[in-house]
Each structure stands twice: as structure tokens, then as C-alpha cells.
Image (cartoon, rainbow, N blue to C red):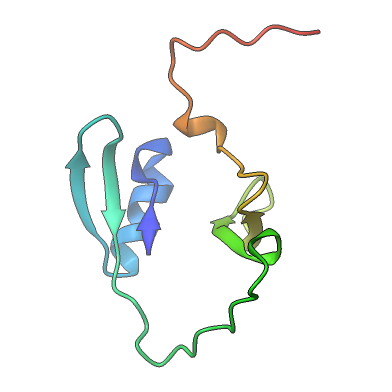
Length: 92
């Protein structure tokens, strides 16, 4: 489990509550690396790569309630916090 701990003090405390170890990672900054639940059964993998999940991103968003978004291997999602501060985004 990976936690983006630099986004807020709440995110850092959340990671610590779940046993994550905070490490400074080159080009990413501080992130939390948490333990995996060994009791979890893996989902079957579809043979067709277009139907496979590339990443599962969990967030509490603005509601404070956890939710997950799956990013498939064809159209990966890049969370805005991972985009370089030097990236210029303009309307239109």
C-alpha cells in the first residue's frame, strides 16, 4: 500500500495510523509504504489487457469517505498531485 503523505498533515497521520513507514523517494518526495494484508485473495486477471486494471487509487476526496477508482491499462489516470509543479495547464 502506498500513501501520498506530502499532500496534507491528515494524509501523513492516516498513513501512520495504518502502519506505513514514511520514506523520502527521489522525484516523489515523502511517501508512506504500508503493509499488505496477506489474507486478501487476488482477483482473477482477464487475458485481454484492455480489461485489466493498471492501478487502483483510493482517496477520501472532499467527503472524507474512502473511495476507489480503477485506472485501466489503456487509459491510465495521473493524479494531479503527481504532476510536476512546472507543468503549465491552461484552459482550452
